[in-house]
Amino acid sequence: MLKPISLEKILFSQGFGTRRYCSDLVHAELVKVNGALAHDPDERITPENLILNVEGLDWEFHEKAYIAFNKPPNYECSHKTTHHPSVYSLLPKPFVERGLQCVGRLDFDTTGLILISDDGQFIHRMTTPKKNIGKVYEITTPEPITSSQIDHLLNGVVLDDDPKPCSATACELLSEHTLAMTIVEGRYHQVKRMMAAVGNHVARLHRSAIGQYTMPADLKEGEWRWLYPQDLSLLSKSVDAE
Ligand code: URA
Image (cartoon, rainbow, N blue to C red; front, top):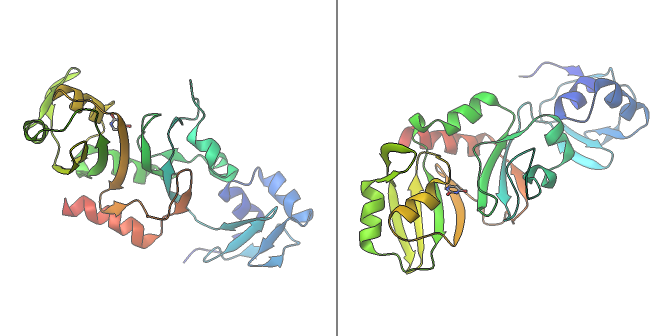
C-alpha cells in the first residue's frame, strides 16, 4: 500500500515537469484527479489506482513504468541518435522526462517488441544473459534457409569479436525464407552476424517475444502499452522456466 503524497509530488514523479511547474499546472486548473478538477497542489492523495488527467492527457499513476512498445523500422533506440529519429520521440513526453530507457536495443531497421522502463533493477534483470531469458526473432532471408544452417545455428557459431560460440536455443522454420530463432544473449548485431556466419543473411528482422511475453496482436507499430503485474510475472516466469 503506497502512502498518501502531495499531488505536486505525484505529478513530478510521473514526469510532468519540475515541482514548481506541476504546482502551476494545478493552479491553472489543468489537472484532474480521478475525474475531479484539482485545486490544491499540496493535497495529499493515495496514488493507488489513481487516474490523472493533465492538460487533457489521461494518465495512470505507476510508481515505476514498465511498457511494451512495437518498434517501427527506421527509428533508433537511443536518446542521442545519429541518422534516424529516436523511438523516444514516439512516446508521451512524461516518459522521456522521467528517464525511461530501452531494455536492450534493436537496430534501426529491426521492428517489434521492446520493453522500456525506469526501473534500473528490472532493466538489469532482463538484460543479463545469466537469467537465460529467450528473445524470439522472426528472420526473413533472401536465400532459402537450409536444415544444415539451422543445425549450425543450434550447435553454435563463432562470431569475430569473441571466441566463445553463441547458439540459438530454438529454431522453428516458418517458411522457406522465414525462421523464428530464440537466443538468450544480446550481442551487437547478434542475429545478423549469426545468419551471416552460416552463409545466409537477414533481409528483415522482427522481434516477436521476450521470455513468455509475446507481442500483443493488437499493438500496432509505433504504439505502446503499460505492462501490468500479470505481464511482468510472465516475463519473470520465463526467467525461471527457460
Ligand atoms: N540482432 C540483430 O542483429 N539486430 C537486432 O536488432 C537485434 C538482434
